Length: 108
Image (cartoon, rainbow, N blue to C red):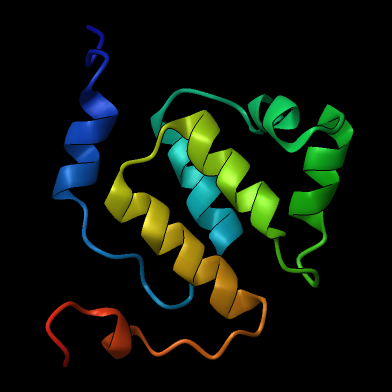
């Protein structure tokens, strides 16, 4: 029996934040798996060939570029929570010194 079209959004609502050791690439893989898609579906959004998507996921020494993160968010239709979590993780991997406490509303 199929879980239905909105099963991914239901699972996302029940999911907590990702652990610190999980990379942005891991998060994109997880979202692809939850939405029943393969990494190849990111190629049109990234404006490249399928092989280039696989290469980007294989080169873990290079951070994901902002257009790649935004393309993944658009293609996978992530909600605001998942999209912001992915953006934050990718920015921190790229070397930005971002303090999550400063991002909370109302001041920490």
